[in-house]
Image 1: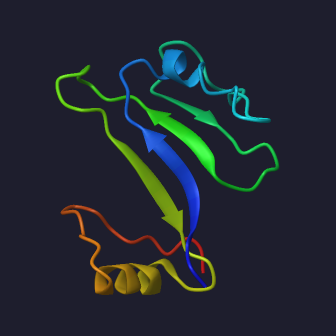
Image 2: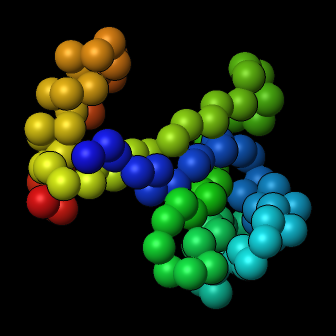
Length: 104
């Protein structure tokens, strides 16, 4: 089985403002805990599964290209096994990161 996308993440300076333009995605709405000036904002998948859209706040505004990334969630194997598989097909491990074993 291949991993599924758990969320897509868009680094930004103003999380609430940027996340406000995304609820037009069919069925998506801001998370109830999000508020202006918050450190993050999220749009949970409407059916309770995935993918979610996530907006973490970054300290610097616009000095470099904004980053977008996908957080993968393994399906049918542990995170460690999936990380091993991804590294085997050319993924790069980022320094200072760890593989958490939260989900089998």
